[in-house]
Image (cartoon, rainbow, N blue to C red; front, side, top):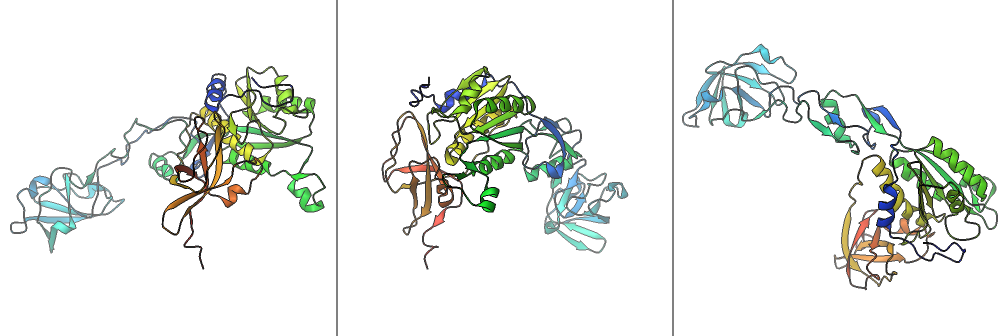
Length: 428
């Protein structure tokens, strides 16, 4: 339980515990829309997709060669070839019924062309020799050799994609081959509410300059883009540091959106109005603070089955809160799982000290040294607002709760967010 006296957090829970607790109260399914295939990439399926057809819909040649009756090739060899009369040529898109392969006959065929009636195998060009209207077969084939069978890719009635699948470009090819032109995907409606009287929109700062004591609202762009990457539509509002206003807007947005995300006002200070406003809603579940670094103030509530994420106003801390709270819960609501991210191992260049019982996210720079080995250089051990470390660096070192950091020279595993630097390549 946190200290509500304004003097700091007395105790905070671990990420896994909070997620497990909150998920028990999440009962809402996000907004669903139907989109054409060209608009489906990067979206999460909102339905199971079954095929109503076989793919391919017919037996077709897997190579360029000759469609034959396999029995006519048995015993053939370079010194004793099977000699077959060539009746014609089939290419992709031709009607296979144009030719019927009988005893001692063959049809020249292109890769992907339908297998003609009577044929049950294809001999590759490499194993044949053409002699006018006849072809010599130098190697026998078994039934269905070099044939792509009907339903080999997809069988009619097969479950091809499960709900929650993140659609990739190659998935569109499979969907199109099944004759599907539209799919239902999730389009969560997220309300992003940014608080903080000290914040100035970048457009205003560019036009009028930045007043003394004010800061540009950069967190807005981080969270908006991350939500859009997950297929969300985002409605953004800038709110004053006023408890009643925050409470009223959260209620309104919760009624019309699938999730509400706030930034600022989530800590334990006198002007941290967001957490106070959300408490007044009598949520089904609320947790104030997480055992993470940076981002201890990141919090979550659930009201009427919908999540309210209260993130830190500091950029890197809010980003961390998004990764450990917002992303996994939105994925859960869509029946999806997170995509695997590239990881790499390297040697730590200096000691990283982190508090025990706290999951720490350390920004690092991963590079190949002059000796050809991989090194990991910590960039910032503190500072939840030092956003440029995510630009100057290329990775995140996650220190688990059961460790008090790593020593210099330790081999650590890093989650990459940008390509690895090469020290030698950067030298003049």
